[in-house]
Length: 461
Image (cartoon, rainbow, N blue to C red; front, side, top):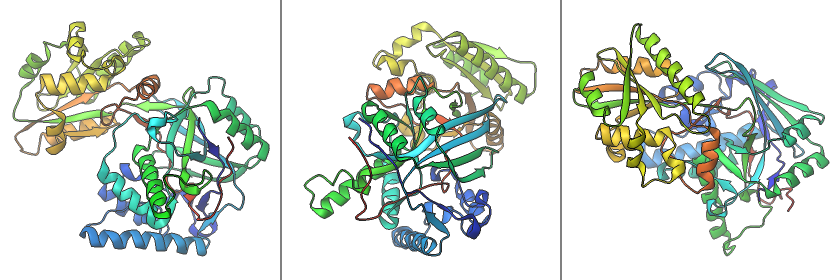
């Protein structure tokens, strides 16, 4: 059962910081090194000063950076740069955005605390692998600051839209609104009605939650709880209403019409020189290959994506297992459709994984056709990822000019379906790296959670 609880949210004070647009950031894991300095220069109160820990000076310098972030967090609270709401509530979070298809959509969710549960309990379900080095960094930041700066993005099933209808029917207190770099408008309102909060809590008591984005942050919170248990001699337990037993989450119904998952395209740096004919020869054992021709490189990519999207619609419940591949050095583009007999190569995989395009790509395209295993790709940085096909195309073309003995190949993907995320998580399985890209991202700094020793979280159940 999922335990939902209201929180006293922390947010920036516009009277102190000016435009909220200048102080929020995307999640830390999608900001590159150059982006860190860009955000720092936007506003002296930008969230990047608290949430990002990127030290160039080794372990000792890293320790100082965590301590500095904690001191700055306390200072901003004392100076009322940051405000903590006096009463707990649940926060409606709407995101208006333009889908790459051109449609204007609104995704509707809410922010609350959620009781931590180990993955083995089946209450909060993951679908992606985590890496210990990332967790170690986030754990040091949480322990120093005693705060959760980034929300976990999770899904739940609510076909009748009961929860959102209940929250939207209540009096709303505006908290803030920001427009991100992609033009997405993120708006937040607080719901403080006690009966409504109790009704929402009761509704979730027999439900499961599915992590869409934030696996490392959730695992970090579990690790922080274990540390406190050991330090306090709790014999494996903390009080159920302890702040350390909870994490801040953005929760969105998986049936919401504004929920979007974008594909994550792959730029593969194949080591060596390979022309398009050899590439086709490698693929012909596994795929039907059709060349897309008669246009500029941009037009070729758009055409192959349109063909893939149409085949995906026709396949209804299952993935169409189609891919686009662009050879920038020879300006040739192909549509790949998996041969039914090639599925035998995935016989050792559970059925829900065999239906994933990302598994077909990793097991058949990468390992069988190109001879590149996951370990080598990771060690030699042979794959770059992008959810934007235009940006991926630019990267592919630029790779041709590096002079290195590589053959850049751009693989264009269809998005993973939300139902596939649910099915994989329900079977306690894990998808390959970068299988999903839920868009837009939740903004860091719009609302976060302070862990205050001695406080009691208002939970039922």
